[in-house]
Image 1 (spheres, rainbow, N blue to C red):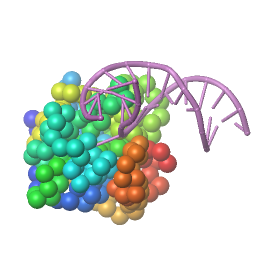
Image 2: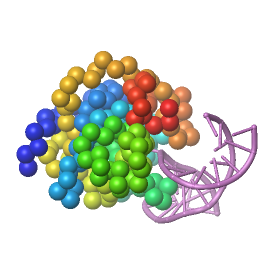
Image 3: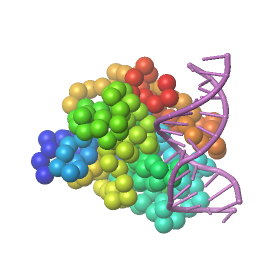
Image 4: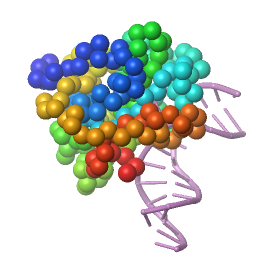
Length: 199
DNA sequence: CACCCGATTATCT
DNA sequence: GATAATCGGGTGT
C-alpha cells in the first residue's frame, strides 16, 4: 500500500512513556478500513507506566488482556471498557522497562470527516473524536486491531505531521477517569485546542 | 453550565 | 459481585 505518509519508526516509542505521550501530540493517526482513509491530528494523550503506575492496566503484571503492553513497543493495546467503548493505546516505554503505553484521548479529524460524522451520528466536527471512546467509534477501532504494529503501513499507523505543529503550548494535567495515582500529571494536550476532550 | 445516572461487558476479587 | 483509562441524555440552576 502506498499512502505517502512518513511513518514514525519503532525507536520513537522506545523512550520514556511521558515523553512519547507528549511527542505524539501533533502527529497523525491514520486508519485504513473498508478501502477508506481516515486520519486526524493527535491533540490529547495520557501516559500509563505499566508496573510502575497503579493506574495502569499493566500494574499487576501480565495477563491475557494486557499481554501486548509487555511486548514490543509500537504496537496497539486496545481494550474494551464500560461495556461499550474501545480505547486505543500505543505501547511505549524505555528499553529497560517491561511495559507502558500511551492512551490516545483526542484527535482533530482531517481526512474522512464525512464518514466519521456519519458513524458517530454528529454534525459538529469538534464532537467526532474528542474523547477516547469517540475515537474508537470514529476510527473503527475494535479487537481486530489488538496488537497491530503501528510502525508500518497497514490498517492502523502513526505518521509524522506534514507541518511543524510543535509551537502549540502543551498542558500537563492529572489523568481522567482514574482512581489511583491522581497526583501524577501524565495527561498532555494542546492548550486552547477545540478538539481536546473535557475542556 | 453543573451534576446525575443508565448503558453494557470484560476482568478481577 | 464490583469496578472500570466513557459517553450521552436527563434534570435543575
